[in-house]
Amino acid sequence: MVDIFMRTLPFFAIIGLGYWAGRSRFFTEEATAYLTKFVFYFALSAMLFRFAATLPFAEIFNGRLVLGYLLGTMAVYLVATLVAWLRGLDIPTAAVEAQCAAIGNVGFLGLPMLALLYSEAAIGPVMLALAVDLVVFSSLIVILINGGRDGRLTIRTFRMIVIGLFKNPMILSISAGLIWSALEIPVPSPLSDFLVILGGAATPGALFAIGASLASKSAERVQIAAWLSFCKLVLHPLFVAIMLIWLIPVAAFPAAVVIAAAALPVAGNVYMLAAHYKVAPQRASAAILLSTLFSILTVPLVIAWLGAP
Image (cartoon, rainbow, N blue to C red):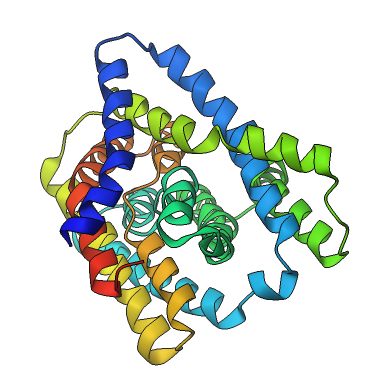
């Protein structure tokens, strides 16, 4: 446990450095926004494309792994939704809380950290988990918020979802890489070097951006944020573990990687969605802040429980 904590500590230390930079205004919110944009559109996309293009397609796709992660994530999503409804919340607010409970920072934190902890072999399973989050649950929250507000679903809502998916650089880079891999096209050396150099900026850039963005987050509604953090850091990996170890068993290595991915704190894009639709942004902000803080201890605990990578 101590060894794993020491191995994960540098990742959280970079997040802490970013937090200091944002909190001290050494890094302004505008600077953080542009750093995040660079990582999102360029560095992380280069990393995702390179791994997807160079791994054999058969080694990446695992239907049982996708199903187990999907069902485990849906289970915690439904638990959070049920609790929200019992508290009398409307559908859009319940959808934001459920998104906090189920969607982790797989792209910015999970990909770089788990690739280094578990080796590059972890990239395939992490990409599958990320694809489920982006395609299924990012679409679901848009449907629930718009449907809950209007009382019905319109063609405009589904058009917005499709356009959003096609404009998401993570989806595009993973899809392009998988097509490249399926066609068995060799990656030319100059292109490979370009992707390695650019993708190398993803890990420090993403972690620093997470910390700097946390500096603007508030800790209002602490009780609700604590509940949502518990769902994300404890219930989510537990439900995914139940699926992948007992109900829909898969090989130990990809199961461990995806369960570890499920243990990550709430994703920053949940706040972006909540703020865009003006639905409980402070609640999402507090959940991101608290879950990231607590994950310094809970993520090493989960990884130690799964067995040292």
